[in-house]
Image (cartoon, protein in one colour):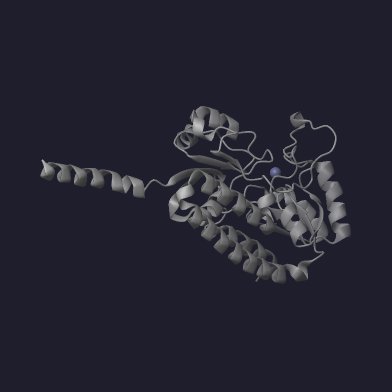
Length: 301
Ligand SMILES: [Zn+2]
C-alpha cells in the first residue's frame, strides 16, 4: 500500500512539476515595441507574442482570425493606447471571447497610462475626415524617456497578475532603467550637434523623438494624420522646407519615397527612411536597438 502511494506520488510529481515550472504568463502585445519591453521586464516568467509587425503601419492591421486565437489564451493584452489601435483591437478582443482580457479587467493594459500626450486636438474631431490622432499623438514610444514610464507600467501589471515573481520583475525593471539611463546619455550626446536641424516628417510619427532631441519640425508630407499627400499641400510644404533649410525628410518603411522627393528636392534635403518600431529592421530586436539605429541613421555614429 505504502509502495503504491509512493509510486502514485512520484507519478503526480512528474506530471505536475513541469506544468508549474512552465506556467509562464501569456502576454500578447499589439506592437513589437511593447513586446520587447515586456520581454525585458518579464524574462523567463512570461511568454510574449505580438500582433502588428514593426515594419507595418500600426494604425492599420487586418483583424486576422489567427490573432483572435492568440488572444483567446492570453493572460494579458497590452496596447499602446491613445487610440492607436482603435481601428482593429476592439474587434479582435471581441472575437477572442476571452473574459480575462476585456478592457477594465487586470488582463487588459493600456500602456499609455501616465504618459503625457502631445498634439492633443482642441475643438471638434471629425473621424470621417480620417483624423487618426483624435486623442493626441499616440507615437509616444519614440521618446526614450517615455520608455521608462512604459516599463514601470508593465512591471506593475506583471507583478499584480503574477505576485509570486514580483521580485524578478522589480529586479528586471531596475536593470532596464539603469541601461536606459546610460543609453540616453549616449544618445543625447550624439544627437546634440543636430539641435535645431530642420526636418520634415511624413506622418507625425517621430514628433516625440524630434522634441526630445531639439530638432526643428517644419511640417508633414501628409496634410493631416492619415490623409494622403495632395499636390497643393506638397507645393506649399516644398516652399516652407526650402525657406527653413530642411536637411531630412523622414519616411517609414511603409511610406512612398516618391511622395517625399518633391519636398526634399526643393530644399536640397535627403529622404531618410527610418524605423519607427522594434522589428522594422532585422537588427532591431530591443527597444535600445531602435534608438541606436535612429541615432546612427541621423548622425552616422
Ligand atoms: Zn499616427
